[in-house]
Length: 435
Picture 1 (tube, rainbow, N blue to C red):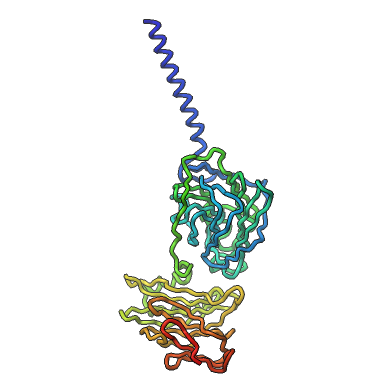
Picture 2 (cartoon, rainbow, N blue to C red):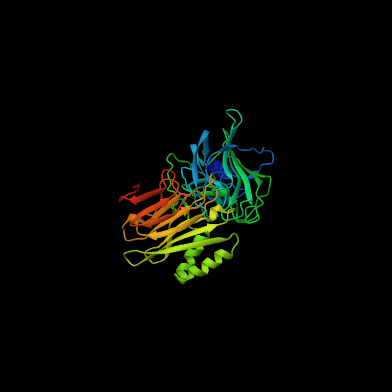
């Protein structure tokens, strides 16, 4: 009996020891992973952590991607396979708004804190400084490849970019570095001391995988970074093998004309919904008295259902060409106004546009007024139509420096390149030259 008891005791002790060993092993492996939503230093569920990056070099990117847009993205091929949250990528989508994405091209401007989970519709995202930037006239989105295979570094840099609606001279420069082989990530902040919203006070800094429900946040809408600072995010040596996927597909955030409703357009919509049509003259005085100044003129269009649509032309000063715009606001099903069309006339190549509303007549015979506009600086004319419920800005052929009028449903201009008098008419689908 005693021998049987000893055997049972030995087996019991052995079971306990095995259990303790398994528990220790489980804790040591689980310690490499954290919760789904983590704050730096982490780790998050995949194993990403945040550390200082003082030993890493600043790399200046010089290859211009040509993305000159407010709320725009561009696809960039990667020079090597980069693994992020367990998935291998050969290209990325870089946003004007201070982030890069994999498998998604969302230019959404309104940064979201990651403490409640990954930002919706942003996919797998690396956000060195997710904020509302405007690259239409100022700044560059650039790339660079340095080093020798298999230890190369690919850089994406936001160089001297301005926040939307801010002074063009108040800009920031920052970048993200992606490391070949190690799959490490480095954020570098060359100059982030903005007067308005600088040092991270209006930005989200971190990374996420929306499909896998995990994120790691360094900062959100708070002072969290300074000039010259580096943030190193190493790829975990023993990453969570349960994360990772083969197929990557996301839908981009829907927007109007590539640009979301924000700033003064959003303020105008709010005022119209609260006060109605009578608010326009008050808003006109407000725009004239603000800095920078905006002059305005508008036309109300009544459709066959008795609903009114607003066509508004804003003109600003020569040093703020980004504020000279044409917009169309229309009522939705509830009667609230929403943005249907937006166009900025100036470009980097032609930074000033002195646009005037010349006439407002139904040229396309669809029962809705069309707007004739002319740029007095270069003699180019446009006709804005809503034919077939599709807002379209038609560029009329040739440059004409003389008078422009609408007569008998035709546009007559003088002082044109090919003739002193040019007649353009609508043929049912486009504008053609009659004489």
